Length: 253
Length: 228
Image (tube, rainbow over all chains, first blue to last red):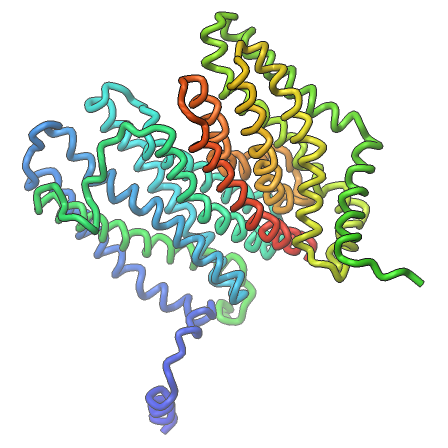
């Protein structure tokens, strides 16, 4: 009898997305999503690497060395995308005063910084055979380095403030200021110097590369996306446990 | 009974008070000034005194040194007001916090940015810069140091009352300073290779305009968080 009531209630009342802002509802949902995302990430990254390393043709100019872009380009995409996503959650946290949004922003930062580091390291590995130097001060590599500095600033501020609520809000302001600065920094660095080859993937023009290469990169990107979701959700769950360990939902008795 | 003050007289009071307080502790203001001169003088000692090399290095050396000098004094921007409770009073006043914050930033710039602008051409001469370059250097620093004070104020407000503030501010603020550095030093570099500095100076002006709008807002928000 009770079940039917709830069911009819669900159908008549409008579905409320905001209920997921409550850690109590979010925690088990995240727990259910994590294995699926991890499995999807493993399959897609394996398939993407297979496409990139075995199926894609050797590049006419760059030889086999170019294959590092299958990791490098998606990692660079996600380094920037995750920063903006972090700023978005930080902004949501400030506007809605939702603790879970701050926790999401906190959880996204390490993954974003990791992808930034991966993009920098793979970029430098690619640069050695192509440019003949481990490091070239070209616009995109430099902006990526500055992005890493912005992530480091976010971590440092959060680590320096003992009061969790203040740390959340202060680092949210910093993330938003950083997000406004990301395009300005990118533009200024580009103006300052550009050696890098032009963008080879763009949404506006038809890509100037073989379809299989694009497919490999996109598969890798979706794989990275699923990996990011899984890792971020795991981190948010830890964060909830850490902050709300005394909450009723975790009581054993 | 207290006389009700208008917004402009309150803003003037904040500015005048900040300057008066700073001038009572002149050693703080002088330290930033002399840090700039001493640090800039170290570079030729490290690189050798080849006039051509010095001339090529001058824009970056002077700009980076100016940037570091401005940053050194940031932690003081709100700290003493926070310590003696003035900041709470300011936040409680019925005048817009954003404008009061802007006045405090202006005071910081007048005390730590403007002296650098005035002395920079003198150091530029030591680095073998010529007339047009010195002019551009002074102009770019005039706009740039104000932008540095504006952006730095966000860092100062975010780290208010936190342990180890000095190094933390540097980590937060230095990446945000990069556009100012690029356009400021770029303007001087453009003149020294015989091009017009207008492009870089316009972009520097654009950065300054954006900082003028956003950073008092962000600083005020950060101060509110710090005082919660």
